[in-house]
Amino acid sequence: MIRSSEGMEIPASLTEWCDVSRMALVVYDMQVGICRQIAGAADIIERTATVLEAARAAGMRVAFTRHLSLPRKWMGATQLRTAMAWQRCNSPDMVEPWFPRDAEATRIVPELAPRADEAVFDKLTMSAFDSTALSFALRDCGVRAVALAGVAIEIGIEPTVRQATDNGFVAVVIEDACGFGNREARDRSMATLRFLGEAVVTDVAGFCGALTAGS
Image 1 (cartoon, rainbow, N blue to C red):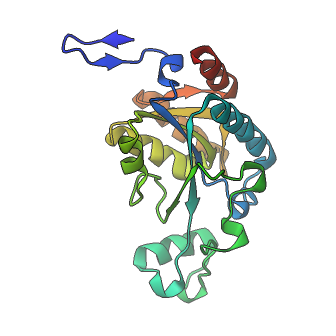
Image 2 (cartoon, helix red, strand yellow):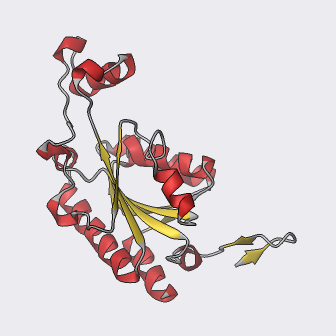
């Protein structure tokens, strides 16, 4: 632990950040309909399950995010434009809500089903911190860091990591438990995060080892 002259303590290692009193695990958008679109999703589900099991065993708080689609009547210009891009259509009248609240596609994959004592945050945006209660809940519990696993790094995990910093949290990216849809875009995202230096980048083995070492 590094201590400033004003008495501010800054964890200096992954093990120190993985203190369950200061960290929560965020499983990002591991939904049935999203995992179907990701090559290698089975491997990401398996690795995320390993991370989830380790966090649960250590007593760490766990949160899940789900991306939702509003009914078309509630889709404004931004939502329609984004949906048109993703659905490869040139008319807003052709847009279909892919992730209604109660749809099968919106559910967390069964291998990672949330438990009763785990939080689920629904969102319309890519960053898990934008227009959700995640930041409030973390601060209210005294959490200072979030570990991230899920899909997709180039779509939602990178903006979540960057906004974590803007909200005063340290983000730990469990790189091999973060899936992607486009390899080149994924590599650019990771290069950006490494260049900025704000996030801690580790892998499943490193995260699980840090939890064990800190217990």
